[in-house]
Length: 304
Length: 259
Image 1 (tube, chains in turn purple, blue):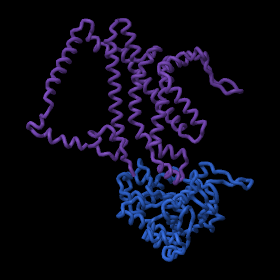
Image 2 (cartoon, one colour; image 1 turned 135 degrees about the horizontal axis):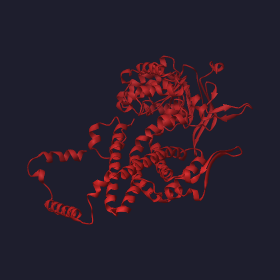
Image 3 (tube, chains in turn red, blue; image 1 turned 45 degrees about the vertical axis):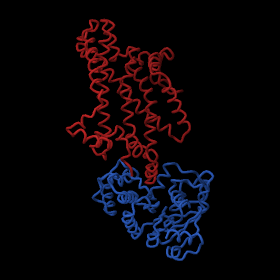
């Protein structure tokens, strides 16, 4: 912040000081501007590109349907990831060795193999287990169905991305929990709270503050990773864009259309994340929140 | 439980505690009667805080017996006369009769002062919300902070935070209050307000065990003073006697240095 205040008087001066730029700056700027203009011109003039197709397909029903699926897959998978990640993080920090090992193995596998592999694996589950049944050993089957009827491309996408996300969220939540001062747990114990109450009422609410920024990152990554489900014909934005371009051969145009929507989604996420961060640190003066260092909301404003 | 009402609220017999190789408590024995104020003094590293933390089992002692209200802290009696480690739930129940105030306050930063005080009664004793709120407001008034009910801990001074922490501990109507160097983390000008609240508590008959470096407070408020060094109680007696006319070499030496 201090550097900002030091610079400010310069900007207010109307004389030569305010314009003390590097002598080459104008020249470099001009070169860059010309290059950009040239680039735009080659794109606009290019007979190989049909720019009109972009606005035309941007609101195409198939694209919008794909967008809806992309949002659904991403949000549901993220929800699964957050719940699963919280459970796994708590297990990871448990005193019970079995719980620690189990969660460690889970993270190891699902964080250690490619998302693409996991998506294809779940979609092809029927090759290994043709039927899925739910039952109690010795009593009988409660429910049974063919795997293919359950594992549609949509459920496969959610299962794959959700389980994968859980492994990443587990590490984020764990870092959040570990960031909470040990004295908080002691204070909760001292007023007679059980470990469960301590976790729910005292530790997790404080862990959230630390977990929000990386979770926003994860959601952005999730929107983009959901494009992978086009390999199992997931019916998402990417699938439908590919479907259209395979018919009209306007590959680049439809990639641009899809990219515009991905940018919209990630931009909204960024804005929501920033709002949430500000809301979770009510002690922080709004003024510094807007202009301060990006890490500002993380700084220990809750210091005792 | 009613049968032991007459006995000491806290009784420690030959309590030992190890941190790895370090023999931190070397047979501490102490009894505290109801309504009594006991101050633990001594050089840092003498084990006074560790002993205090053993009383509500924030640390588990390794040997010896620790009874609060006649119950072995952290254990439960078995039918065959033996002892077993208490389950977390039982331990939580045992801790409810002991209030604790920490050196660094440890208020819950995401809750207002009022919610900090209400948290125990609401979550642990399942007191109805309105009733808990009324009690919490009264407690904040008792520590002189009724107008700060809606403030977050970060908006309060150290002294105010510690007074809220005292109110939070009192909210569970404890039979015994433990204070772990409650004024050591405070700016000098804020120490007085906390000691005043503690003196009032003592006058109202609260049973208190206080680890402190405030000799004036100990002399004024404590019934008894225990001087600890190297994990043992070296000298124990009336506050007047231990502070005014110490008998042991180490006590004399320590008091000369803190003065």
